[in-house]
Structure formats: C-alpha cells, structure tokens
Length: 232
Image (cartoon, rainbow, N blue to C red):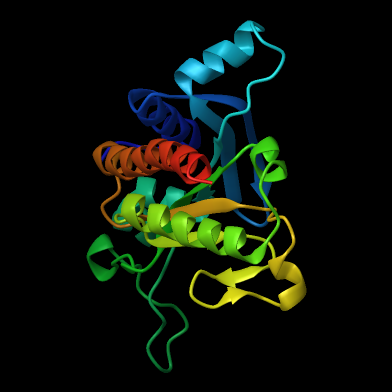
C-alpha cells in the first residue's frame, strides 16, 4: 500500500472536483484538537467561477458547495504503518506473576472495520439573493423543503449521511417548527452529504472513488439547486 499524506489526499480531492466540472477557491487548511486536520474550499461550476474571477461582471449569484475533508491523523499514521508497524509500539500484557509481556507482531493485530480515516463533507447552498427574493409564506416554504429533500435523495444515494438544512424547519414531513417560523423567509438553506473514509484498505484508488462520488454529488446538487429555485 502506498504511503498517504494529508496533502496527497487533498490533491486527489481537487482532481476529482475538476474532473466533475467544478473549480475551487478560498482554500484553507487547519487543525482541530487533538489529532484532526481539515482542508476545505468553496466549489463552483468552473465556467461560473471563471466569470467571477475575470471581473467581467460585478457579482455573479450562483450556488456553491463547501467541500471539507477531515482527517484523523492518528488513523492516517496507522494506515501508513500497517499492523506490523503499529505492533512495534505495543506489547502483550504480561502473564500473571511476570513483569514483562512479549512484543506483539502484526499478525496479532487487526484494524477495527468501524474506525474511520476521515470524512468528506459537502454542503451545497444557494446564493443569499435567491433566498431574499423568495416569498415568505408557509406554502412557499413547504414547497422549498420538499423539493430540496427530493434533490438530496436523488443525488445522495451513495453518501453515508444525507440531510437538508433549513433554519426554522424540522424536516419536509414534519413541517416548520412553529407557526411563527412558517411565514419567515428561509435562511441557512443547504443540502449536506457526508462520505465515510474507512481506515481499513484505504489507498489512492479507494480515495479517488470516495472523492469522485462526493464531487459528482456536489455537481449534481448545484444543478439541482438551480432547478429548485427556478421552480419557485
């Protein structure tokens, strides 16, 4: 298995986004305690991003996808070391009455299949202007929730988590959280996807598959967001 690095992972992610017609800007990386590293960027349709960055117009109102890769650095080290390498840091418990245990070997260890190397999160949101232009009434808000839920289900079939976020709403089935919120113009609107990255068996090919699925969902959701707001 090839050795993985955080920046190699982010490069694979950016390549998969490009292959799906998405350009990324506002790239940022950082740490979350104790051993979590993240990389995120804002993705747009590449043709629209080119227009925005060319300065041809003052502002282009287009949906965007916040793409975030979160990596457990301890799990990343384990993936690179393998069970033999990890075993070099460990010993078996000593038998009763003895002070020292025997060194473990890689054959003594297996990685738990539920341990994740990290997660890919994708949040697709409309531009603020589209929300400001909407009517603020119960029927309009309910239609928005139902259409977003439909888009999320259609594009997120391969994701481990699929959610629709609308401030003031519970979900498309339950409706709005209270009568007062039903007539408030919706805010905080997004379609969210999470893709698990397992520790066991991870490599360049598996990463490309997971990141490719996330990139396709981002692209399709950007187009779906346009349809939702065109329908009114």
